[in-house]
Image 1 (cartoon, rainbow, N blue to C red):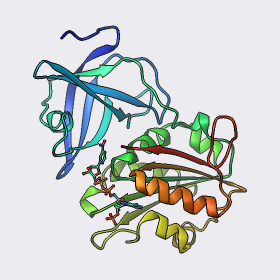
Image 2 (cartoon, rainbow, N blue to C red; image 1 turned 180 degrees about the horizontal axis):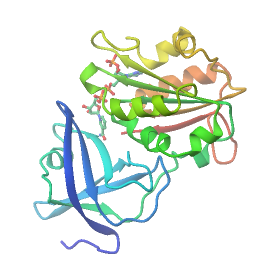
Image 3 (cartoon, rainbow, N blue to C red; image 1 turned 135 degrees about the vertical axis):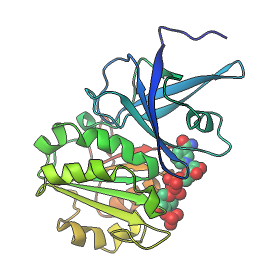
Length: 250
Ligand code: NAP
């Protein structure tokens, strides 16, 4: 089987960074078309004569290089264990055309931007926060990262960088659910339901002035959307703008 070079760019692995047990960031130099922060690319490898590819969000800002992909190894997955075995200098195929609608250009105006992620779905939010747009458009930005254990709190230096540049505009909270040590230990929907997140953030989560982007575990996305809908939030659809913009990560 041959690879369509119009669709696929040969990427050169620059670095494979291991954050925790099954969590990695793959940094790649590849020629691709421009993308908007929040979009995803595709990575592919030729495995036993078959070309296998999967979508992965960009963590890097659109102008930033190398490309940066944050991923979890799915034990019985076809591609992710092979990505985790790559070494600098290896080739990984990168789709030339990025895709996706989980971007700020799809999000209506608001005062407060709430970014809720579990696991590797932190990635698209980091890309977005590395651009100027969210800081110009919103008075205050609250990023929440939900993980099982503290070791899964990746990209802490990047997040600390946002905090130091946007001290008054930015708040970050970790939800670590299976051991102590996060800013809170309940799941994200529970932190919203109990009012804990608003209390910590010092900001009300209300449809009048908040926009919420949610990305990650499909069950977390579903539960959080239902909770927000009960508070009067509406899903942001192309034909009818709302305050909840979502991306299910698998
Ligand atoms: P995860 O199970 O998604 O947990 C991350 C955080 O989300 C934890 O704090 C967890 O809380 C919370 N959470 C789980 N279900 C929730 C719900 N219904 N509502 C609210 N919060 C919820 O863990 P992960 O390590 O990121 O991913 C685990 C597995 O997901 C992987 O091993 C893989 O099987 C799958 N996954 C698949 C892909 C893919 O592309 N196919 C990508 C990423 C992950 P608790 O600790 O209370 O559960």
